[in-house]
Length: 331
Image (cartoon, rainbow, N blue to C red; front, side, top):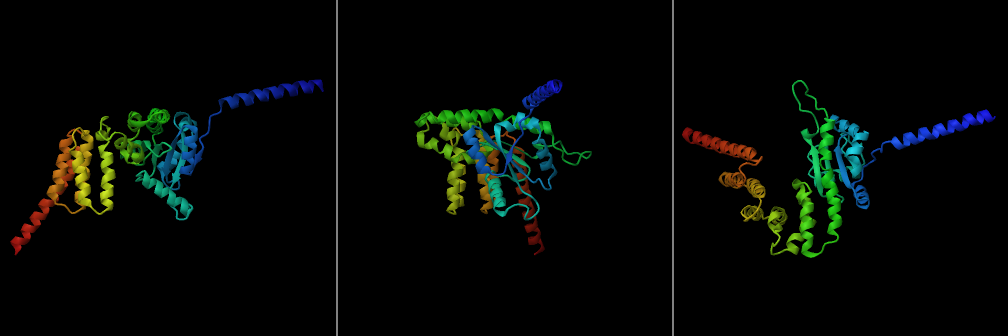
């Protein structure tokens, strides 16, 4: 019995040691939810941010490959641990998801301007976008030899991890903002905006609204820096009234504002051109706005696309004139 007890004791000790080793080396498993509001509440209480994975896990190969990547420990250690993880899925089969949940998913996708799945949005609990990853940022280049998209796991993790610093900065800046009052808040708000994706600044409505309120004389210069954001707000109001021309004028005026960043001036003229085109304005006016957009920032990445649009408009005009002349000659 003593001999048995001795071996039993050694076995228990060995088992304890094995358990200790495996427990100490275990990897934290990523936990995914499906409710955005709940994730935001948890992120707020834990000092983290929110990871939104918009997918079609039922039939989209890239969504499925990403889902496998997100189940791996390397994702959790490099990215996942900084976020509350939420999968916003869009199954292809009708009735595969509760109707109310599907509606909520579409509303959320619309809020973040998601145009295709898969798309990844990293945001704060307030819904301010830190960064986004989508399209060819996710997979290897498609070639004749490799026509099927394949997720590049290293590239995806690198793209996502690149936002870690900004996410941490925002958590600290939000705490800093709580200690500020009056116009002193604006420097912190500006830093927060600089850590967020500029493509989604329309979501910063409430945050940026403090700038003109606290600094109506523009002593900080921030009214100029964020004038494009204010222009969208004002233009939406005019649009709601049915005053499209008023919305166009707001963007033209914004583009001509002294000191406005060149990229904003270019965007303002482009937006004016877009609104003009959709309001039945003349081709000459639309082209004029687009040419001013090029002048505002000739070396921007948007210029080739703007030039292509101008060429398409001019080609259409020439074709119409030729057809008109042919009709007159026939008569």
